[in-house]
Length: 188
Image (cartoon, rainbow, N blue to C red; front, side, top):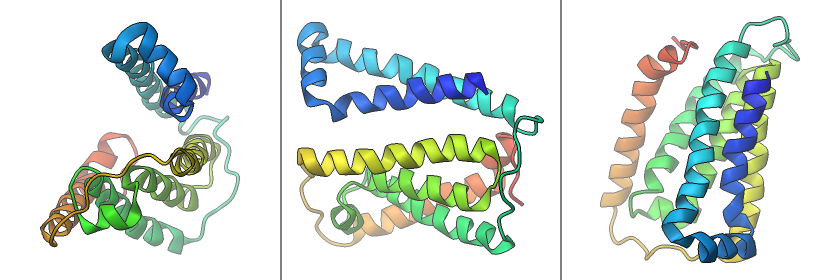
């Protein structure tokens, strides 16, 4: 559990720096933009690795207690929510009307991802991992809106939406049928 918690602190902590503009500006001023990016990227990457290894080591141990038993329908709802999450993730990088409507689809994707996993799992691991990301994404959304982070130029036409739906759908299917199993938690 300690590796997981340390990983969450490093990963989310690194991603919280931009939510404090004065701190971010001070770090950029002191280390330059590339130095700042390295300062944020290295702990975040280390945190991601610790999250992966920590969750894998914690899953199924006696400490990973069952807190509640989710009804079967929550698993089906999670599959649908994950499709939405992957489309939002794709839309974050593709100019589309989806991106324009959601405003900050990467943050929305994390929120939906975390919520989907929380409703379908009832163990301590899920609460720690997905609960942390859900709280982070809610905080980040509020922070982004309060800071008035500039949005990208509006999309023209529906081509981007088709790309976001297709790209998100492919990523969803690959994860559902293959990647999730590689992570030690097969879905089907």
